[in-house]
View 1 (tube, rainbow, N blue to C red):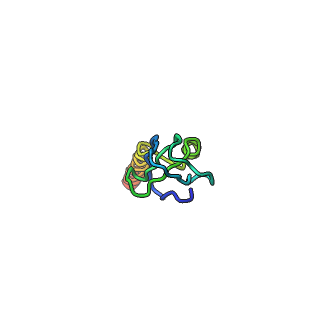
View 2 (cartoon, helix red, strand yellow):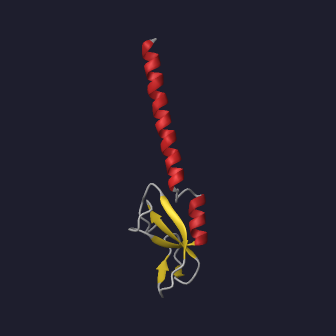
Length: 97
């Protein structure tokens, strides 16, 4: 993911720019004309660090788990919290015996 800011989750949405610019896709060496269909990737949903990418490249990165959504990240946080609670509960239970 060269050029993409490392973050816990990403907001990925379709984008199309009307300004005459060419972007570099962070997942492949090809250039991305602004008028073409593409996506905007925003780390942590913020504007700083945003990157434009080909739709196919972003879809491939999502399948590989490189661009987790906020919902996916939150689900993982709940699982981690639950497992920590369970560990503490089991520790307390075994101390009493």
